[in-house]
Length: 55
Image (cartoon, rainbow, N blue to C red; front, side, top):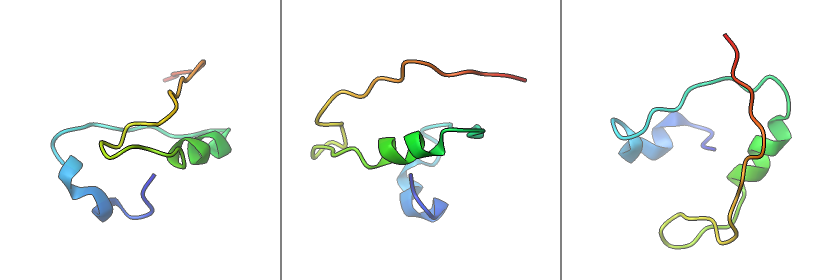
């Protein structure tokens, strides 16, 4: 999770990410700290068990 959106400009035009974390931001932080390999894939698989979308 970048602190500055200019950190990962190579993602521009390739990925769309939007949303708002209402609660559980500590889980988002934990996901951003997962150790990854040279291809930026998690060394241990990460699974999101539950997510809620509301309008």
